[in-house]
Image (cartoon, rainbow, N blue to C red):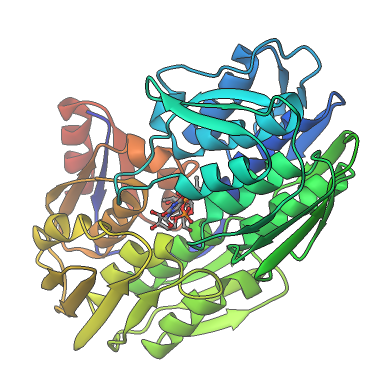
Length: 431
Ligand code: EPZ
């Protein structure tokens, strides 16, 4: 029953602090297995996917101490298993990073095939291609990936057929302790790739080229401990940027790296919003008359696929027609049917959506079908006239820490409720 219930129509105003990048932290947590020294990770987002990964580390014997909500100390000395499997780890996509890390350190790994948001088929063939190139046998058995490098791992020259964030990070994890040099070509260049590489280098790895098309790794004998702070979350920041624009608000988004947000800023500027960039903050002032524009999702530095639902909600309120092309995933428009319940006018043909902007949305009960779709529907509800309930908010809580609390601090009338009675109380309070 967990829902977000909100009364829209209030322009968001004020300041919001962005947390650590979920998609960097997930790879970094797995990377902590690569040493027997203490690894301290700071600026961890306190979200479900992160906590599932930390629990999985404990299950195989690692010591995991939460120093505070956003800092954890991990020590893998007493890891006594290379087989990770529990009902929670099966639900998340990032479980695959344990394959690369366990293989890299122990030359063996058994991990369930990954779960994650239903936004496409999400194969892991490129991950497996990389592991095999490094000398590991890999087979899929009983729904698990079983990998073993009987004679150890040797550096290789790997060309990724698809630009893949997960495969890029996973092959880095598997190769930092391999013998010799590894070259990975056609890699992903997202900020979180660079962050994982910087983390591993802070442990004594020798990785060059992260953030470019080619990553070069010289295997080292051993890695040592580190104390590392995760970069700010580009997608959480972008989500709040879109919320400011959709509600015609004025929001200062703090603890960000503006350069990571350039493609999102560019689109919001094209739509007529005003943006001020500071060293570690960005201010978005929404325009009353949103202009249409076209968006095509691409690997970084292109427009992020994880921002496609959110920017589409803003475009759905623009004065004209926009075209959105989703070139990364094959099924990332599921939120469109939910948004239609609020009065949007969007047609989807394959991986293209044609958005005819409407003057405004009306509140409705809608379902979060995946993490970013859920966040987008909350943005729509905050812009809508009347009451909106977003159901299945567990998806949203996988990747956004205290989402409703941060929105409340910006003036949003929104609450997390878990019963019809609480929902009724909210309705009475805002009526
Ligand atoms: C990561 O998923 C993120 N998840 C996703 O974020 C993000 O949307 C995606 O990267 C793209 O940026 C995590 O980091 C946990 P990919 P991942 O491998 O690694 C195809 C969110 O909202 N592909 O870059 O699964 C794949 O099908 C989530 O936080 C292969 O064909 O994405 C897709 O079409 C959603 N073979 C494309 O590549 C492979 O072996 C990009 O996928 C791997 C991927």
